[in-house]
Amino acid sequence: MNGILQEVAANWVVVAAWGLVATAVTTSVLEGAQLFGFSRLSLPFLFGTFVVSNRRRAMIFGYLLYLVGGWLFAFFYALLFSALATSEWWVGALLGIAHGLFLVAVFLPTLPMIHPRMATEYDAPGPGQRLEPPGAFGLHYGKLTPIATVASQTVYGCIMALAYPA
Image 1 (tube, one colour):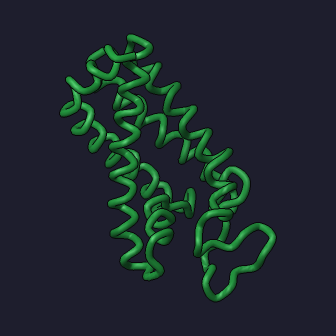
Image 2 (cartoon, rainbow, N blue to C red):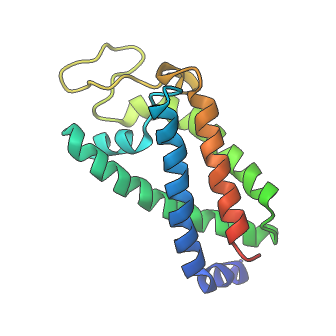
């Protein structure tokens, strides 16, 4: 395990740089899906509204939080690539698919339980809870939301795999 950590630490600049690129591309795919009407999901907006109530500021804070999260996941992916001793594109794709499936199957449905400004499936929106819950697989945000989310995370995994020197 110590060797794996040393390997990732030795490549921290690569991981940080490509984590930024992968996060930017992933965000572009998700936001593009929203702009084209495939989904109403904006993870940066959801993250931003978690910390501030002002919707304009929420986008700024959300993008910053999403970037930090992307960097953290970049190091997690690098640890996995080092532990598996491979960083083939298809390994990154599989990790991205697993990441995306976790987001739509676990994270999005449980988000209303912890998000201070989101209504739940059981309670109507109130004055302090103006956001609609994503629902199972994020389907309240559009029929193509699960596909767009999993696809964006798959792209993230592929970028990280192609960039990381295993």
